[in-house]
Length: 400
Ligand SMILES: Cc1cc2nc3c(=O)[nH]c(=O)nc-3n(C[C@H](O)[C@H](O)[C@H](O)COP(=O)(O)OP(=O)(O)OC[C@H]3O[C@@H](n4cnc5c(N)ncnc54)[C@H](O)[C@@H]3O)c2cc1C
Image 1 (cartoon, rainbow, N blue to C red):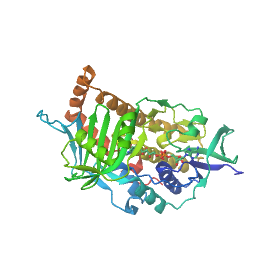
Image 2: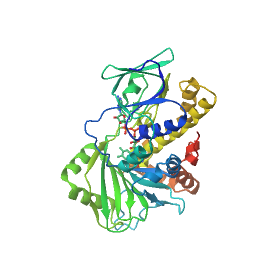
Image 3: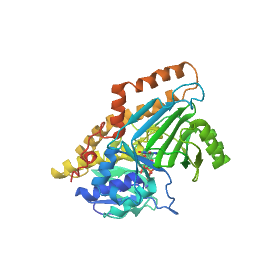
Image 4: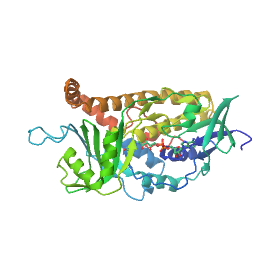
């Protein structure tokens, strides 16, 4: 139970909360941190693709050099619509983006990133609490946990994931998109080198992505209809390897699943409002994207970096973190990027996953349009980050 309200309370224990705690530890504001107690900590076996601007931010925060294994750079992105060309003579991977230096993005294991964030963090440790109540009265946000304890602050920052309880308690809407897809996630080895290339094939059932983790190992995120994913995962690694080979083709030689097969039901949603009096949402609580563009955590990094600039301004004016200007400028800075990336990922997934027919032909036109030079260059810049939002941390500059 806290008597005097805290300046800030951070809620969540995922990658967004860890990174936000690190930013807050430099901000000059006092804060406490609440995270659900985990009975047995399950390691997140996924990988995350972090764009160039995100890498600069993590370097400025001292995280990048603390990673126990190097991130794999991505210099080429290859995209195709439909399965491998077989004998039709059609060119495979018609859309390609390349950048010699710097790398467009980097692939890192989530567990490695999480450990590096823990290693550099010097602020208050998270206090175990499952938040079940939210109330805002007289400039104070009152959070109640499952044990009935109350936690008071001027501003709460909720990073409690896509099914955010705090978002619901604050009556902020989430508009779900019904995709009926599950991502089948694993690691695979390849016979031929990946050459630091990220592959994405838009198949009728959903996008299949392979991100390089080393020269001969890649991370698979294969989105497909829920039932198909369930069946395939149950059939085991050999069946997944064989289905993968058929759907992806032979450009990487023989591919073999070499890790556990995990299933992630996809529940993308749009949150029209990401602040309320005394509350800010960040990470998946503020935007739940389809993983096809590998942008979910990159958006979370942008939330944190923009919030850092807002807090810096408030601090230099001697304002409380709960001052209305912080929420207003954060909401304004995040709006355009969240709306555009939500719209792009949803429409690309829908259009490029159409079976043969009129829509499929239209999507073919759209696909060709992506290859037009100005669009292609713009997409490359967006993939590298720092285009749709330009906070100081994305240039590698600490605002504090
Ligand atoms: C298959 C897949 C692949 C992906 N690949 C990429 C990629 O390549 N690049 C990329 O940028 N993004 C990627 N993403 C997205 C990325 O994984 C997420 O954006 C990111 O993990 C979200 O982290 P988060 O901390 O916001 O949420 P979460 O990881 O969901 O964490 C939420 C936290 O809040 C806590 N919590 C929940 N409720 C409460 C409560 N009531 N009280 C207290 N605490 C609470 C939970 O315990 C948890 O610790 C991918 C996503 C998927 C599904």
